[in-house]
Figure 1: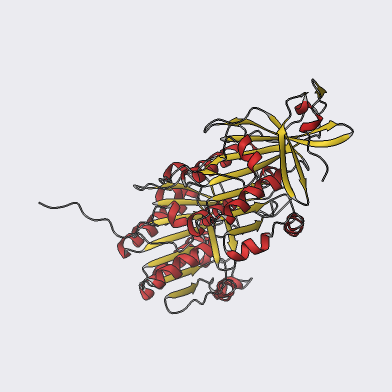
Figure 2 (figure 1 turned 120 degrees about the vertical axis):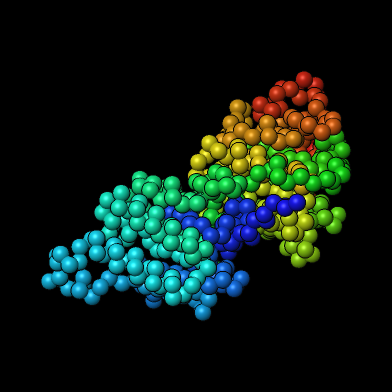
Length: 498
């Protein structure tokens, strides 16, 4: 019996994350199109593709028609790369006569002859170098020489047949400067990857890519964020939570505050998500930090991702409460990252969280807060989808997640800029209320999917001694509205000034 032929190992692109999207890389021996407007990272990805081949002992050839060899090498050097013997550069320059004004209109150098000479020069360079990987930069130059869509298609088809005989893996770049709507190469290429750049009204540009086509191969569809950093392009594959499932014991995690744990019915279940909602200054951040600190003191690993507050201020004010975040970080049990919403894409943020969970073993994750996360979203209507996938992934990894949302207003009716209460397993509500001439804070649990919880409202106080939770306020009506009515004398249940 003859077994099925084994597929050839894929040609890895060398771009972090892109090979994951392509399920291993590019199938060897085919022609691929990498398209995008100038500045989206095509040349950088192409160089990474050739350098990755050189590491595997595969000779590479970069044929440049739009950049000089010197510019190409300078661009590689900016990433710390040196194009050695494994990567050759062939700079295709026009005939000297074409640079002479007296000969530019000569019939001897018509577009037909220019196109033919260009193709001939490309083939001769390939015959000399015998490369396994080839980059053609860019198709816009060939499209200009062809002058018509029919001649352009015929030329690309001829090149494709030539490359097939060579058995090389070819990456053609198209900067879309001549005709962005020309899909000629889409039908001829084995795969098509499109790069895009988005410019928000405020903040850094956002880049994303999408695999439009990949014949006979599966791939991760949709848009994936990426950045161009020193060292090359980094792609952040879109998170698909259903692909990540692990087994774990659903233990109950405590906060270290007995009254708070009692309010929560004993604590928070591992592998669940908790949303803390309340107006500005009501204690949302410190409440979530309390759970992270309790985890770190138990010897577990926790991570704080701070959007809304300056990190130094958080460290200083928690130190006044007797919590030394810097010491916990030095112990290796606590990780704190300041997140700049204006500079970070949602895909990169998700990748940072995954890195802590997958590589550092973090089991308690705090995101403070979703208001800043929303600001990082170029398309806010998809925020809940991002959060849903992230929460599902963390839950399936056995990580407990704490999120905060600041509501508009201080007392009375308040609104949240984003409603994700239906996504969270537990929802903790914080409120201000006035009693006996003082502004006080109240805490209640309005939702808990796992187990039971108290339906009462308790007072919560935050001062130099930390967080204190009082007895249930059974004698008040209307605490959550901010203006309670005394149904009975309940002053004894309020926390005394200390």
